[in-house]
Image (cartoon, rainbow over all chains, first blue to last red; front, side, top):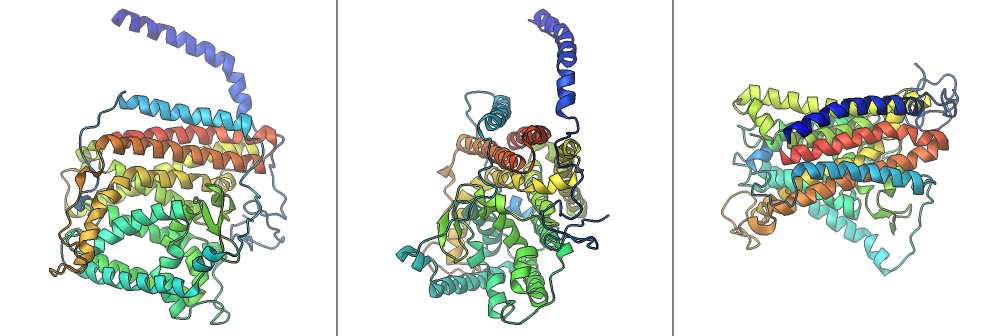
Amino acid sequence: MGVLAHQGEELLIPALIVALVLLGPMIKHRFARSDEAPGAHDPGVCAYCGSSVADADERCAECGFRVRR
Amino acid sequence: MTLAGILAHGLGGRVDLPVPRWMFVFGAGTALVVSFVALAALWREPRFEGRAERRGRPSAIQRVLTNRALEWTIRLLSLGFFVVVTIASFLPLAPTETIGPVVVFIWFWVGLAFAQAFLGNWWATLSPFDTLGRLLGFDESERGPTRPYPKAWGMWPAAMLLFGFVWLELADPFADRPGTLGYAIVGYTLITLGGMAIYGRRAWVEHGEAFAVYLGLFARMSLLTRDRDGLVVPRPPLGGLATLRPRPGLLALILVALGSTTFDGFSRSSWWDDWTGTLTGVPETLAETAGLLGTILLVAGLYAIAMLVAGWITGEGWHVPAVRFAHSLVPIAFAYVVAHYFSFLLIEGQIGIARLSDPFDRGWNLFGTADRLVDLTLLSATTIWYVQVVAIVAGHIGGVILAHDRAIAVYPPGVALRTQYALLGVMIVFTATGLLILSG
C-alpha cells in the first residue's frame, strides 16, 4: 500500500502541471476583466442603488452611500 | 465561561454516523458546486429581482390578522413580559435561576430568529421598544418633522449595537457579576428611545434598533409578509431578501451576525480550549474579544476577496459588488444560527418553562410548571449532527441562489456567471469550515 501511495504522489505532480498548462488560459480568461461589464458607472447614477445623483452630491440621497471620492 | 456556557450550551454524546465526518464536508462542497452548475444551466432569468408585489384580498382571517385591538393586546402583553424579564435580569442570581438570561439568550435571541425566518416579522409587533416608542409619541406622523436621520449613518448604529450584544453574550465581561444583564437591557432601551426621540420611531427602528434590523433580515426569508395595506400574503422563500435596499452598515451588520456565530462555535471547540482554557478574568475576556473580532474580520476578509475578484471582472472595484451581494449572506447567517443553536433552543430553552412559573426565584409556582425538568432525550447527538449538516448546506445553497439571481439581473449574460466563481469558492470554504467547527 505504501509503495502504491508513493507512486500516486509522483503521478500527481505531473498531472497537476499538465492540468495547469491545459486549463491555465481558460482560468485566465474566466477571471479577465470583461468588456461587457458595466465598468465605469454613469456618474449621474448611484452604483449602489441606481438612483439619480446630481454632480454636486457627495452621497446618494436615496441610499446614503458615498458617490464621490 | 460565557453566559451561554453557564447555560450548559450545546449537548455532548456519542454520534453514530455511517461515514466519516470528512465525507460530509466533501459531500456538502460537492452539493454547492452541483447547485451552482444547475443554476447556470437552468436559472437563466431573474426570479426574485423585480418581482411584482403580491396584494392580499380581504377575508375573515385577514380581518383577525390586521385587527388593531388584537395587535395592541399582544403589544402590551409583550411589554409586560419585557418588564418582568428586565427585573429578573437585575437579580444577583445564577443565569438559570431567574427567567432573565434564559429568555434573553435563548427564547429571544435564538427562538425569535427561528420564528422570524419561518413565520415572518413577529418582532415588529412583539418589540417592546417599538411599542414604547409608539406609546411615547415618537412616531414621525404624530410629532411633526423630526431631525432627519443622517443617510450616511445607514445601519451602522444597528451594526455597532449588535456587536455590543454579541460581545456581552460571547466575551461575557461581567460573568462574575450576575445582574449586569438588567443594566444592559435598560441601557439599550434608553439608547433606543433616545434614537426614536431624536430621529423618529420608524427611522430608528429601520436603522438603529439592532434587533429589528437583524431579525428583520431573517423575516425576509420567510414565506409570509405583509403587503402595503398590511394584509398577510405569501411569497417565495428567500424572496424578501432580493428587495433589501442597500444601506451603509448593512454589510457590517450581516458580517457581525455571521462572524459572531462562527466564533461561538469555534470558542467551544477543543482547539480554542487548548489555547485559552487556562485563562480567567480580564485575560479571558480579552482573548474572547480578540477571538470574536478576529473571526468577524476573517469572514469579512474572505468575502472581500471574493468581491475583489468579482469587481475586477466587472471593473467596479470591490465595494459595489460587496454591497450588491450582501443579501446572499443572510441565509448563511441563519443556517449558522440553526446549526449552532437549535439544540440549545430545544433543550436548554426548556428551562424557561419552569422559570415562567417562578421568574424571580421566589419559590412561586404561578402556572404549575416550576418543577418541570429538562428533557435531555428530546434530541440525540446524531440527530443534531444531521440537522447541522442540512442547515449549513441549505443555507449556503440559498446564498448561491440569491447571488446568482442578482448577478443575472444586473450583469450581461457573459459576465454574470464569472462574477460568481470566487463567491462560490468562499461559500465552499465557509461550508467546510462551518462543518469542521461543529464537529471539532
